[in-house]
Length: 316
Image (cartoon, helix red, strand yellow):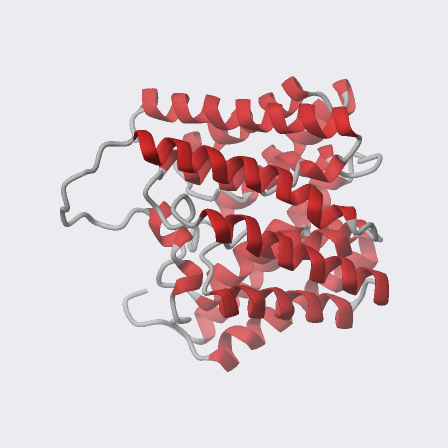
């Protein structure tokens, strides 16, 4: 993607998030601004013929169902290994059962547990954002002229979108075991920091992709860049929210800054947008948040690096 195209779609994504922030503020429903809307919007705008853009029903249904699960678990169990494990496994089963490519639905399911959301209005709030995005994707699809069929190489965004349509490329016991180790290690630091944000919801999306689908993950091997960009995005979101509050133009700038950092790092990792937007839905975020996020990313990189060293892959 050239610089002009990148800027065009970055502005489109930022404007969409700004509008969603305005709706959230006007209605008093903070979770209309579902943090992963940034990643969804960016991928759909830049890849209008990809699996996410061409699956409007699943775009609305998948996060809604995982959000329902997340609220049900949060209302029934305290935050801990059991509730987190049930939440993650339940989200994966919903996505697999629907044959859905909407990867960020994992975040929709884990966010209630991370933030202590008990309100059944939360899943409905998510429908506002994903529904708007689905309508935009369909409107744009109708405006696109049919393109001739051609053989093209898959892009990093194609691989992200297709991840849940793919069979894991490593044995179940290996990636599930590594994921369990990562969650256990993360929960230790959750205790140390006294904050579930160490395991911030988009991190679970990143973790599954790196551990279960290492041959396709566009950010595998870029752990350092991911930590730098992710921490920068977290600081940008926190700083803008702390200085100006939950206002549309602050969310707009948070998206632009994060996409600029990704561009500078030459990194394809849309979940970093969730890190920038998360402070806009946290009640009273504080300056520990970026460091907590960095801790979670460092745990994941350590587990992935160890797994790769112990179980080297052919062609790695």
